[in-house]
Image (cartoon, rainbow, N blue to C red; front, side, top):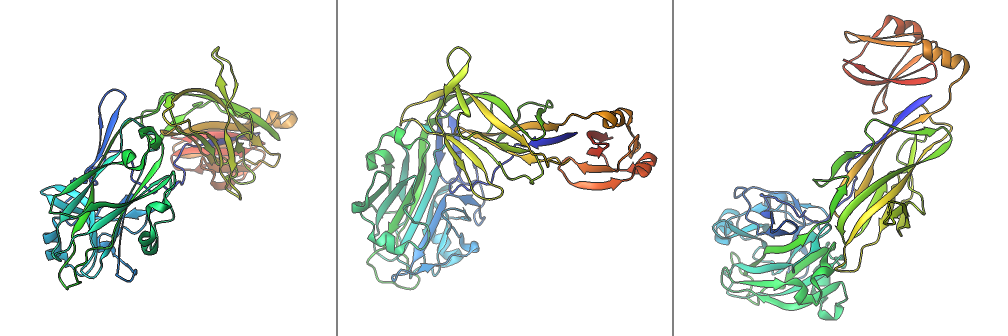
Length: 496
C-alpha cells in the first residue's frame, strides 16, 4: 500500500496586533536601506490615498470619553479604530478646519489628519462635548536587531477653538499593554509613575498643546531608561492621553488636536542562509518530489537543517500535530533532543535547549521555542531539527495537508512530502503488476482492477468509486491530478 501525505507550507492563524515594519504607501510607512546590513523605518503618515478614503490597518487605536468617563462610539464612516488587537479604519483627512466643515464637530472622527499640505499625523477630533482623548500606536520589532533609538513626534495639528490648552501623559508598554484596550478611562485617569515596572512606564506632562505645527520629538529608550537593544524583538505600545482643557464645553468649539507623527528607527535583521529566504512568509519545498517513507504502524524520524546569521530573538518551529483526520499520517516534534547544533566539525551533536509547547485539544499545534539571547547579543545558527512522522495501523488511503512554520524573526514555511509504505506480497503483488492505467481525451481507464477503484483529489476529497467493469470502459474526468486506490495500491495520475 502507498499513501501520500503533504506537509504544506501556508500561513498559520496567528493574530498580530500591530502594523508591519514594511512599505505601506497608504499608511505612509517606508523602509529604506541605510547600508548593506542596516535598514531605516519611517512612519510619517504621508498617505498617497485621497482625502476621504478609509484605509484598513492594525496598530492604530483611538477612543474619546465623555467627562463622566463613558466611551463614545465611532462608526466606520468616521474612521473607527477601537480594537487594539484588530483592524482599524482611519480616514485620510485634510486639516482640522476642513474636517470641521466637512464632518462637523459634534461627533468624534479619527484618521491621518493634515498638518501642512500632504504632511499628516495620526489623531482624533473628539467632538465638542468629549474632553478625554486616548490615542495608541502599537508596533512589533520582531525580527529587528535594533541599532538606534525609536523616535516619534507629538505634534499639535490644530490649536483648537475652545481657547484652552491640553496636557498629555504618555504610557509605554514593552511586550505589554498592561490591560488597556477596552474602555480605559478609569485606568488612564489613575495611571501614574508609581505604576512603573521594567516593562510599563507612565510619564506625566509629556507634552502641552501649542500652536499648529508645534512638535516635540521623543527618544523612547532615553525616556524610559532602557538601552536601544532592549527593544529588539519586542512589541511596543504607546498610549497618549489627555483630559482636555479647562475651557467650558461649547457647541461648535473644540479643544486642541494633538497627534502621533514621524515614528522612526534603524535596525538590522537576521538572515536565512540555508534555505535561502528572500521574502517574509516564503514557501520552501524541502525535499521536492522525493517523499519520506513511513512504515505502517511505526514512527519515522525526518531530519532537516537550517542555517542563519544574526539572530537575537526567539527561534520558533511549529507544526499542526493533530490537525489531520485520525486516519492520516501524523506529524510531531520530539519533546526532547529535537534540535542539535553543529559541533564545529560538521557533526550535529550539541543539544540546544528549547521550550516544548503542545496546545490542548483536537487540531492542536506543537511549538518548539529556542529562547532569545541577552539584549545586544547575536548568534549564527547551524542546526539540525528532527520531525516525526507516524503512520498508525488504521491509516487509510487519504492524502493530508499540514504546515511547518520556522521563524527567527523572518518567518518561512516548509513543505515536506511523506508517504506510507507496507509490504505487498502474493496475489496483491501480482495484481499490482498486472494492472495498467490509461488516459486519453479526458477519459480514464484501468485494466486489471479486481477491486473497486476509488478516485480522490490530491487535497483528499473522494470524488467517486467505480467498479472494475465500469473503469475498464472508462470514466470522464476534468484536467488535473488524481489519486487512485485499487488492488491494495495507490497511484497518482495526471489527466491532460
